[in-house]
Amino acid sequence: MIRKLHPLILPLAALWVCLASFALRAQENERSAEPPAQPPAAEAPEESASDERESSRTEEAIGEDIGERIERRIERRLRARHRDNAIIHFGDDSHLPADREADEVVAIFGSATAEGTVHDNVISIFGNTRATGPVGRSAVAVFGDVYVNGTVGEDVVAVMGNVELGPEADVDGQVVAVGGQLVKQPGAYVRGDEQEIAIAAGWLKAESARTWVEQCLLLMRPLAFEPNLGWAWGIAFAFLAFYIVVTLMFGSAVERCVQTLEQRPGQSFVTSILSVLVTPAVFLLLAISVIGLLLVPFVATILFGAVLFGKAVVLAALGRRVTRFTGIAPINHLAFAVFVGGLIVLVLYVIPVVGFIAYKLLGILGFGVVAYTMLLTLQDRRARAEPAVAQATAAAGPGPGAAFSPGPGAAPAPEAPASAESSAGTTAEAGPQAGTTAEAHAEAAAPQAGAPAPATAAIDVTTLPRAGFWIRMGALLIDVILVAVLLEILSPFGDIMLVALGVYGALMWKLRGTTVGGIVFGLKVVRQDGREMSWDTAIVRALSCFLSLVVAGLGFFWIAFDPERQAWHDKIAGTLVVRAPKGSALL
Image (cartoon, rainbow, N blue to C red; front, side, top):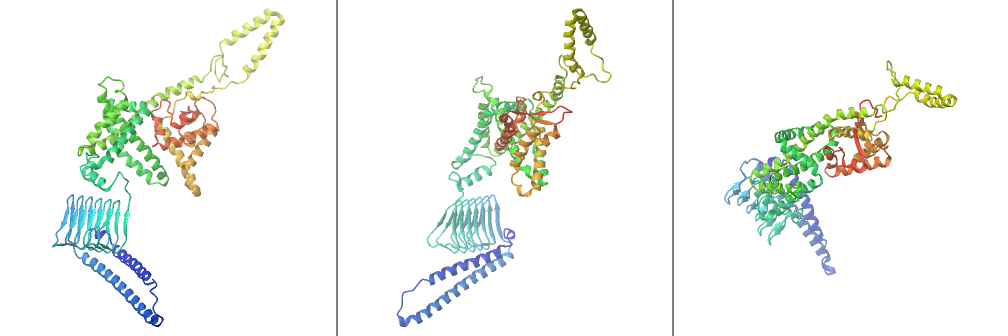
């Protein structure tokens, strides 16, 4: 079975043998190049001829040895192609007795032992490999140790394990220990290279990894009470500490999501299932286009941050069911509820099968709760958007004492005739001086009466409704696609996507108060104090966007829960993103 997966192994082996022959020949040449002791002058010609004949015989012997090795390997390949005698076990050990032959001995999640003759390979995955009889090709162990005390036609490899060669080991190829040690007893012979490749850290060794696979992965649980699994428990408690920090930093947002889960558990679970089904489709749609591929890392970062945030929410909801009965203020804190919920989940993690289900449900339900809370927040914003826009438009109408030019068919102001008569009467009674004063008032009032007044007064943009998360992400998507297209045209500058986005945003915010995506969705970036957008504010906002993105996208994610719908870069720069009233020009 395994040899069918390697049709090129024969030419590669021949190439390897050729290279090894060249190396051996070079070593022999170096040894023969050592200067011999000075012979007497009369015997020098005879000694020189003898050395030449010896050198030629050595080269011939090396060539014959290499040729014989190549012939043996080719013969083994040809014989193996006509056999179908393999010992393969999944979840159990594979054993070949000393008086039997087999093409291959393979064990997956078990150990492979070959005491008899193996024509091809001896392989174990998540187990140990032991070969004391002749092996035609290789002896390999993945997450296990290899012991060889016989002939091996090619290589001996251990990935995340140790290699031990017994006194009768004869390896025709390389011996490699990846993440382990190589032990070679006296008498063992290796014709190829001997390598130890250290890749594991001090807290994660091959034995620890194998213990986790045997005690956790095979039993479908993340954790177990085993001596070599301290690193796994350390990772679990590190994530729990991270969830507590997230709760302390974004307590109001976590509280809102917890309320959603407690008040609407059914809808939250349905949203979780739909999220699992929709997420692969979203990535597929992004992957089928060149421009969409640029968005895959950004979207993946946002989803990863949402999953982590959602796990903190689920832990808080689980722990609150225990802490709310205590009546003690510090214990009722949301962060302590996360700690209690984390301890409960860690206990579930050590139960076979249940631990795997709990781990998967924690992430799926957490993401669904966050997504459903964002949908509810968006619906609430839409429900309040129309009254807010109407109120802002009414507030921008004519104020007390403001004069507007009457439109066609408009009725005259009712107070005008009375005022005119009163002014005329006062002028007539007051004499010349009073008449002069009245004329001055009339001249002062004449420009106001004759000049057309604006139809609407200036609108305070800070009173407009705030733009929510999804509409801002839609505008950002349009801007990303636009910048990506421009960078695709300017191919020499294709590796500066984030820098180009920052420059584009700073220019558009300062010059137009919005971007192309904002124009499409009717959004405007304004300063929180109502003043005009300045260069320093636009640049600070652009630079702060990198901070919002680098922390798993939480800066953008914060828009959905902030009362003012501000991202982190909005809070740093002191800006707001508002929805412009209908009919207002954004260009």
